[in-house]
Length: 275
Ligand SMILES: [Mg+2]
Image 1 (cartoon, rainbow, N blue to C red):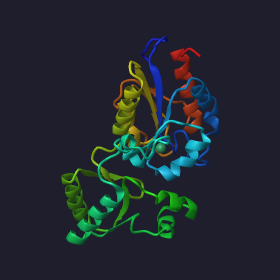
Image 2 (cartoon, protein in one colour):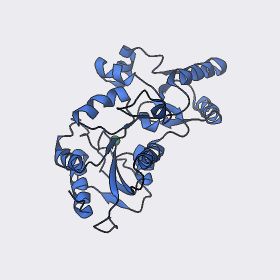
Image 3 (cartoon, rainbow, N blue to C red):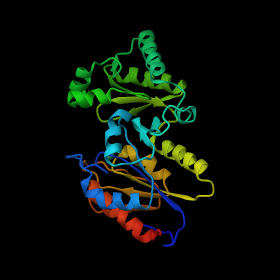
């Protein structure tokens, strides 16, 4: 529960997972979170969308929510800065291997070791739609990758172990997702991305003491929940929820955007930020 004084002068920053957290698990609606979102906007609290989705997939939601803060994409493998996406400073926030370089590396490994896998870079949009169950338009956005590669493993567990070892020796890692394995930079991850963005805010607001709140509903949110000053666990629609080690944790009473809304309003009440 909240342990800080009610007149904490530190500036709030909110990091949130999307599916099952800010967005309803079934309808993808964020409408029930409108009161809390409006209050955060009035207080100029940055809301950082943090997701396994691509920038192309998140851009529309980011616009709908009228956010101007950066957002974290592809499981923390990249950070999109909407204002200055093309600047060298913004590019430096992301990792060294570009997506074409990552694909070239993976294809070279496949050729050399005869691994059997297919990734989004191998799939057409229609194949991504068939593999994911997404409609074509959304499959096209999911295929617009910039930082990480989801792949379908069609080989043995022993080959997967060998593949993982080679990735790790080359500063990459493998995350197991729902349908796919994801290859990303070894420094990627929602928690690391949270730290990198906080550094960005600290550089741009000298003297400000940021207090980070992270909200999530899944095991892939655990490192983000642990990286924040306050973790908000949203009850999961599936049976597996996150088990953060963060001692400062608030368990929302309801799922999805309803839980998101009440947790944020509760935090803002206890925070008594001056309007
Ligand atoms: Mg989720």
